[in-house]
Image 1 (spheres, rainbow, N blue to C red):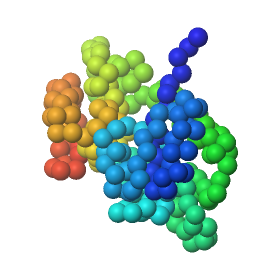
Image 2 (image 1 turned 120 degrees about the vertical axis):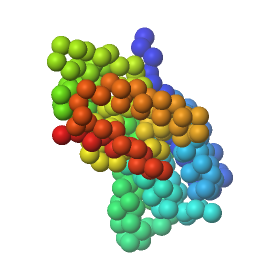
Image 3 (image 1 turned 180 degrees about the vertical axis):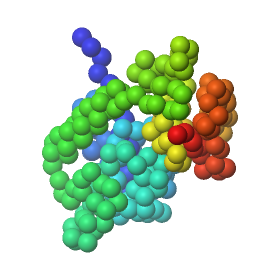
Length: 232
């Protein structure tokens, strides 16, 4: 029998009872759940670990769910995000969706319905990721095939390591635009620690070496922010 991936959920909920009930229910359904009870702790958890979906209470101490969502979206604009809220005013619901929520669920809610919504969103994301695996890139003289992990220049082929491949893919997806450092570290290394940052710098140097035969291609370091792959 094939092993199923265990999805990781960040649950931020300041109601102790509801938080524990939801955590236990989701874990019984084979999810790995981190429960935090205020927005600042939620942000710290998000910066430490890589998650597949975030469930955020709106009214939390130290940092509310809307502010936390903005911080999360700055790092990863694509991560699925649900608001769980007792705030039922139309203005609050609109604000939630404007912040990029996939769903805004008002309390009280049915845990089984929440579970089904989570499954639908995660399945959708998985299918999108699979379709993105088939995308190839032309970068100046080079042709890059992420699925095969191959960077070709004429008759020469460089086979990339998994991390080199993922990093070049992210740079190519953001071609001539900023790839935020924190986003790349979170997605490829799992967290944005100092040591992971130093590791990424080594991989950037390797990619520059692989692309050196085309003077029109450059990986520019945008100090303190990230990198930009400049390519025709």
